[in-house]
Length: 415
Image (cartoon, rainbow, N blue to C red):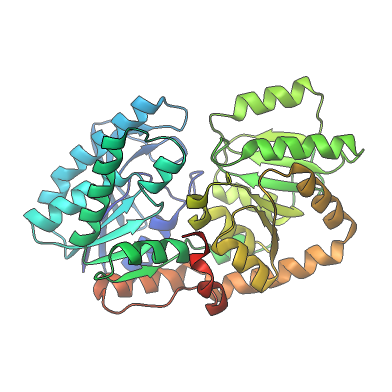
């Protein structure tokens, strides 16, 4: 089968970004399918291009690299231009590349445009993949304010759902939300996956100024949506309690990085540490030896449906997760006892929990062992790649969510 995949942020493990499409496509290629991904150049990806369009191959995956650059540090208008440019340029390949099925993955939602063109002008089977709830997310976060733009965005969303042969949401909450909007369309939840072999294989700890099990780690974008200030405020509380021996480590970049790092320096915080982007393969050791993995998000209802890569990779590494959404991740952590959910506005609660974990080493170990076992059972890339492939082949073959049934029952909490 020939699969054409539109995704603007493709990366391999050599990059510093999620590898869902790479991992899934690699599995599909190994089963004899032909996969072509049309992508652009994201600052956290390892994709690079000198020409306007380049053909590259990664482990049998054919990648059309459009030299359209996108960076989280870009202005709002420049990012919008990058989204539109990718959608328009990739539409050429929607019309010219032969495929049995087209997968169009958002965000941004503009990535669905080439998929829709392939559906209506070439008669291709279309599977939409929703990584975020748009336009709800943009509206709740204040990105889209104009009422006319809101109506147009909702109209495009609904039109896209009705045009699709099937829809994949990245969390049970997304699945519930989409199914309510498109009850006549097959909808499943296929969460992000973890590379179990990479994250579960114990690696030696090598870092010049960190001590194993004495730091909590955050990996990803440093910004308002990610509630990054919560981490700085917790570091302040720890230092005020005389526990600057417990570090909070941030690995990544983003719009708030300089502001937070500069503020930490001005306050003399020695326990708030920033490390730049690094390949996923180098990140594993730092995650494995952390006392906890931090998965903060702004306290906005739409973010309760999120499915961040770091959540699954942390579980695979055997590290308890601390997060602050009220959706499916909260239910999952509580039911399976592999982590904690805290108020996104209560930094003292985070500081106190880290102090408790430092004092109760056995608690961290027991949580971590359960997390690692659970990740291998439910979030292995091979399992989820097969589930999505089966759905692509026959959207009527609807699977249940990969999370535990008890967790799924509560997944609509945020809707």
